[in-house]
Image 1 (spheres, rainbow, N blue to C red):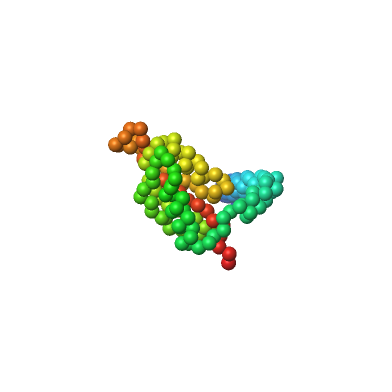
Image 2 (image 1 turned 60 degrees about the horizontal axis):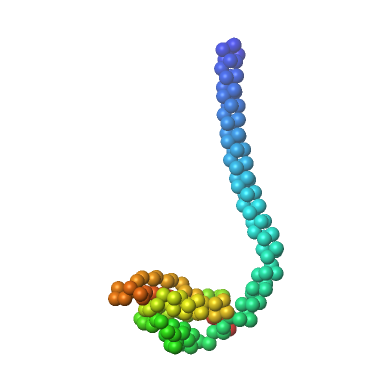
Length: 173
């Protein structure tokens, strides 16, 4: 082999070696980044698992309270009737409800939800006191949406549009 051919061969081998080094380092850096991301995910999962174990007693206590206190599902018609009667606010003073529309019942593995959409007209403090009395934890009721606006006819009164929901234990299978 001539001297120029040897130089050309060494240059070609150098380029191949440099190319292999670039490809290898790129592969190495990509794999390292993937492993770091996977490690971060695993560390976050470990933190979540450790937190769940630390809070186990509290969640078991809450589950037991829920099992003891959540009202039993009696039937679609009965729970719809019950939420409708509550939303009529009979015997309440300072406001009146109207436009009561039953919402479709929703069933999940954890609960059955009955609901009603309604409008309340009257004194703001009376409406809020009624909502407060309705939504204690032991009642399993919640106001999903609440929109307040001043009454156009009387500036002392408000119009409250809301959706009132109640959750029941899932039906026995």
